[in-house]
Image 1 (cartoon, rainbow, N blue to C red):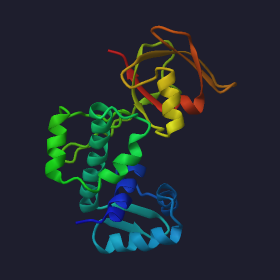
Image 2: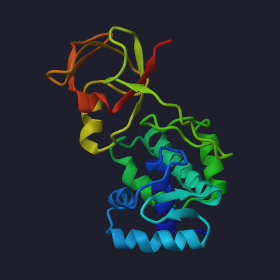
Image 3: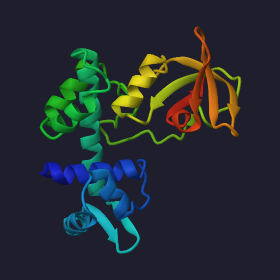
Image 4: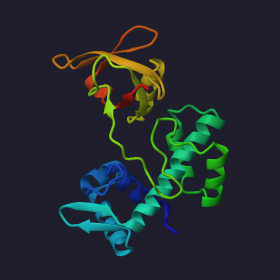
Length: 220
């Protein structure tokens, strides 16, 4: 069985590659894990020896099929645990990431399947992130954001990519939650502002950076 450290490395490689097979730079991996580059180099070499990753010196690292299976399983646990903490235990969605980081390494696959059934087999976690299936499939569809979408078209928010407590509080206070309807009424590149409006309420001004963290799709 993989250790929690190994699982963390593989999960972050999966996230940094956005679920694909792109090479992840050693610097990006070190930053994501908050460790020094030398530590990453040592671990990556060990993971390459165990067959979990392919390491290309001076280029980066990518998951092998074996490494990807482990990473998807850990990510599935993390996101299902977040659903349980928010939907069943009624915890704040801005506080569950830290708890899920701990619990994802302790849950067995049997408990995970029962948790999935209890929750009704959700496809996304409370932030809108896709949950890998039991078979290891992960939605990798590319979505527009409030910073790139068509203006004056009905939209539905599907995912919040910045899950810092501060940004999630901002999103919650302004009602920009996954599932909510919204439309962009103006995008001013010169000022770097996006104006969004929900069905009810006043228009809301967001920076382009903030708007780019809110993924949307056309309303149906």
